[in-house]
Image 1 (cartoon, helix red, strand yellow):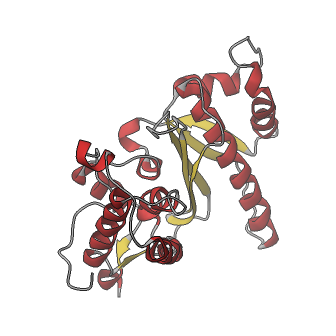
Image 2: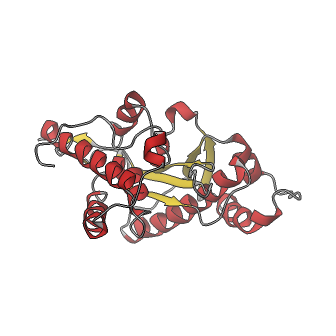
Length: 252
């Protein structure tokens, strides 16, 4: 793939009917080697985390269509090998997190994907893409589980920063684009439709009560974690990607 033609996005927006009917890939060992290697690249390339996560979900039963998706990812990397993360040392060292989920986004099992990224000042320092363990029955539920995962990570980062004498004097903002999930976090009354996620509700509220975490609404248009939960159009992907990674050639 060294001389392959670059492409603008790492993931195809919608699979074709031909791809859905694909047969088994003939060299599963090669598939696993490539997918495993790409996991290391996500340490400095958060914008490919979703695509790599999807590829790695098929290591045990890789199809030709999955290998085509992997090759597409390599074509994107070929054209963006000079990209990476930058650390901005002159910005205020306040934590900020974006969190999102794609409700029932996986067409095979209808599980949702959690995605979040955390900034220290202007520098991205932590990100995650993970398929949720169970099927969420609503977008609110999927989003709430994503918020709980992000809250746990933010809490750990706050304690780590305290060890580095970088104490966070104010509550860390979690930016979410689901108003129902935010309302659920602020409302201490449960009803029949939400009792099954009561543990996560209490977990988040404890941190909101001690003012270490605060939930804020952000429009879907400005939600950076959108990049970590679903395939996007080229223009949308490039816009969000530019806020997470930069051309290292331009920063030298």
